[in-house]
Length: 462
Image (cartoon, rainbow, N blue to C red):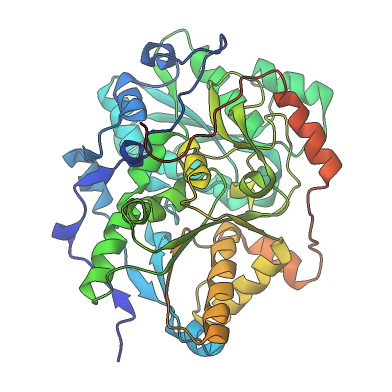
């Protein structure tokens, strides 16, 4: 009997986060409205300084506070599982492992950064946090984290997901958060969007703008904004996933995986699993690392590497990233957490450097893979996670065709028990595929023409 669950003891939980910024020297700085690099002080209306310090840090290892570890112990370390039943179904010589992030209280990887962000805001004296959420995983995670530290939480949820996923909204309310459909009439920018596009499904870019506006306009000075993906400190906090996975593979005698996979929307769960392995790749390891995104929102595979705003109202700094344009409103696919116009700059620089090889899938293929997964492994995955499963299945089939034994590792970023409406639509034949047309993409990218252009820099600095 081979190991199906590889468990770390609690004493083996990582005590430091890995900061890949230390190993990506060509990462380009965020820019302000004047086109010049922003200073940490410019971010203080939005984030507390202790989080800003992590955002700009180039230290390779950053200690995890004991107060954060005490809460992470509620579910971490999480199991590394082997998908033996899927392997048998596919008749593949590959070994398929997955990091089970669905076991957190919120059912996804998101609390890995929600807890430290709530903690750092608390010790800085902040009373209220605003945020956005797409599918609702981040909003529910931050609601849970704020509840743990006695903070008020206000969540702007993308309207299409607000309507599609009512139980995510209910989860947030159970933990004491206020969840609002975005665009809303609660902010100046939300009212502007509703006037221009009253039937819009919303977007993460719009919801971010509303949450930032809410935070910076609070006259008490006791509100800050929190982001669940994209930014450096978020990627940092999520690396606990990959650091645990490395230890777990070593426990069963596997020095390295051949292929590492994660779905990618803003980049957090992908980065969390893959960055510790990317460090090995930077130092010569032969590992293929694959971010998977939807064809309806193909940021990495068809977007432009450019300086762009992270939000629709242009309230955030300019980031060097792959983007579809900050005004882009994605099609209303069910993988709401992957409907974002941009991508984490750290992930994008990894693509530029050749560390990551992105690919895009249609949602019908992903749901088909999700059903295969549920009918072999038994678990019902989130629509976002199904993208990683689809790629893992493709790689396992490729290994069978090549007759090669490979180790495939992917991030099981969240369960789909709040997403059964999407499964219902798929199984009743009501979902369709959508591939972003070139004319819409090109028109969306026109918004970038007057913004600064990043240099495409690779390798070590001279």
